[in-house]
Length: 343
Ligand SMILES: *[C@@H]1O[C@H](CO)[C@@H](O)[C@H](O)[C@H]1NC(C)=O
Ligand SMILES: *[C@@H]1O[C@H](CO)[C@@H](O)[C@H](O)[C@H]1NC(C)=O
Image (cartoon, rainbow, N blue to C red; front, side):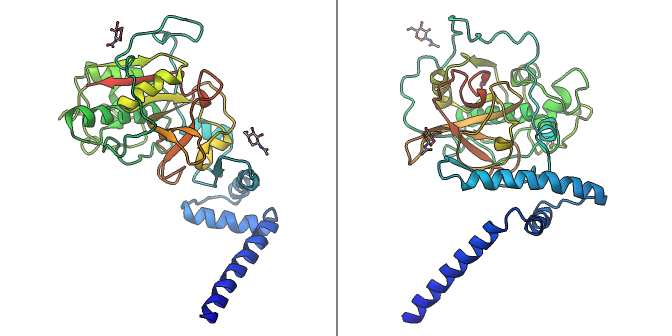
């Protein structure tokens, strides 16, 4: 018995010692070099030129320091961690991994200054409950990865269509983002941004969308090829009144909703866990799906977001983010442009 106690004590002590050592040496070049090597191995990063490696190392170091400084703070609701994006600058990250453009003329949305509210299907929902997680209802496919292609809008739209298809038809089918990327825009946009409402409009006009299996994702625009057989259809889509988290809550209580967000900041980029409350603006550059909401153990209200950056970002690909903030646009502007499809 005594020896077990001693063993446990020894383990605790050695853990604390090594923790203290690595923290002390955190910003020393050798420690950072080692972390960079480990990180390169973990994310299979290979740099062909030594100069490129030096350059990337410096960016990695800045990001690592940013992450460690944030996590040392005791008064925080969320943690950061280095991830697959940690050798990119904020500007590079924004250019490669986001991808929402709100086209001129998308004015069907009620503007912040307008007191006229658009009517929408879920406007009279009165019972939203304390929490909702559409994953538990089987209405969310596994987290996908847009790769280095700015087509978040396609992933956001597809997540909402997958959700309503499961809710209305009882079947969860992974649907094709690539079809939207190849066939949903009449111009050669490549990996450039677009908006989910236009993706829904394409699915309506096309009388459906095929499955992921039938038309897999390639992370670049290709020529539109056969989209048969149809795996899901929608009849229309609706816009949630802009800048109103209460209205958004009604919608999300009924189905997953596509929203735009400012996802380009260093904190958002390296979010690991907890309830996100980092720096961000309200101008949209990224899109995600809101697949639920709840209240944390500490009593903080949050939205549950499904992202398209793979499972190594955030809480296995998901983010919890502050809900009911002071700004009408919502945290990072998530309540500005919100849409959902109808079966
Ligand atoms: C902790 O953070 C909250 C929210 O940012 C702030 O209101 C509060 O004053 C902070 N508390 C301390 C002790 O810094
Ligand atoms: C919500 O209720 C109002 C008032 O009863 C009604 O006019 C409106 O049509 C309802 N909306 C929907 C989508 O059912």
